[in-house]
Length: 636
Ligand code: ADP
Image 1 (cartoon, rainbow, N blue to C red):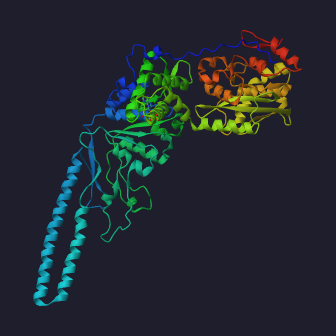
Image 2 (image 1 turned 60 degrees about the horizontal axis):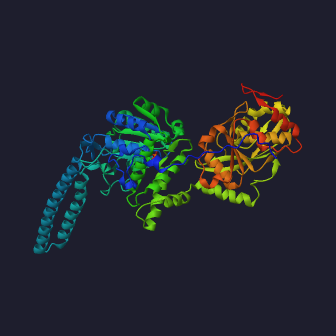
Image 3 (image 1 turned 45 degrees about the vertical axis):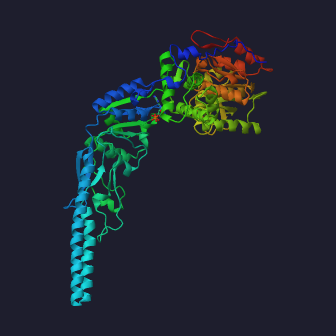
């Protein structure tokens, strides 16, 4: 049996009580909570971002928001549009240019006037056309009358046809002189909020449509083919672009020009279209830009564009969690009320349901004493729970609906992971009992909320080349190499063997998504030591943790999901970094299934995972070893 010198820790699961959530609040359901009318006041947990948006709205500054999806970036951008003054809005019109057909004229008028002007022009044109057709009708009647009287039939018909043709072709000419309303506003709407995420060049910068006829009186006049882009529609308001790095460099360059000039002429975006010949006068596009994305958005972004935003605006990092305080829980309750109200179809949440949502928010935060701010997902959960309640026809959504929603609205990764566990059982890929040499059950996280058991196998041979190598596939090479380097000192001390004298092969079994960060380094180190020393590893143990060069086990992410995955797979003991102990928020049903073993040092991992059999020597060495205050082992 393995040596378990560390006493098992009684994990304390601090549960949410009614009093924690509703202290001092007199409410029986989320319908009793007031929802503020302004969007900016509905944002929770991102106080710093709210402050920046308020400031930026007054001064019309650009903002870059970096952070995880679903934390409220587009919501804040919309809120900013609400805050911008609407007096400054303008309508933009295109007029034909009699001097140069390919260079339509651009004019701006105060918001609301554009429609009136265009209507006036249309009425005018119609009047002219009517007058002309009346005149022509009279002429034709006259000609026909003359022909009847004088019997000159042929002349009559030719003359009538001639007059008719003249009329037909002069009509479109009149209509062609009517200006086109490019961008229009109602005089009392709020400043525009334009989401240009993922737009191609034409949609972003405006375009001139192709004209298939181009001549012969059938052509559409060029000013009529001009279409405004998102940057023009955002004139006077907010242009929001999420995943800013996915815009082509060309579009980013043009966006920068638009930002600098405050105007951008519209031209046909496709080279071979007749639209490419047309280029309007500069079209105003003074907007506030809100660029968003996750961290790699910064890398993919045009440096000049980024520096423009930074020089003339703010950069904000969105929070992923907020502290689990009384005040924040109250805000979270308001969030539930908001989501229910905004959905408009689902029943409000009763007290039990609200507590359960808060519990889930704690769990998803992945951090002790915090609530998640990935609120789009939480909103999804609220809507699914509400739908279930509505199906049942109950007055309120209650705890059972929230629980059912939790199991119904699992992420794709979580479902894949379950399927994978099921399948690997069929093929005996998952070994969760007995012992094996050089095989260790590690733990990984897929997506953001789904754990999986990730076995690691190791084998070694005397080195073939000048130096020993570490062989692993793909991106795992780096992780494997690093964890082996980190434990090489340790290995040398306790096995007397030098990893540089060996070729070490490491395999991560059944991984298709890769392993994140270095949370597999404890696993790799254990597998390698087991292989080198030929000591079997307990297979009912799974482990996760990062390693320092001194063998300290350092904290990792996603510990809750990893433990749950281990429990589902049938693992009995999970070794985790002690510093992660506070992040463990596993669901009730898993608590009985696994024992959690917090450790500080790789030596404790080995003591618990390796099975001595007839290898007393190594294990007794391990047992004797003590960590001195500097953290360096004394093998004697
Ligand atoms: P992002 O743009 O960061 O991906 P969104 O702003 O589109 O996220 O958020 C989606 C929805 O989630 C919002 O419409 C809102 O209902 C909810 N939500 C997200 N973050 C917050 C927040 N901080 N406060 C209140 N609701 C939020």
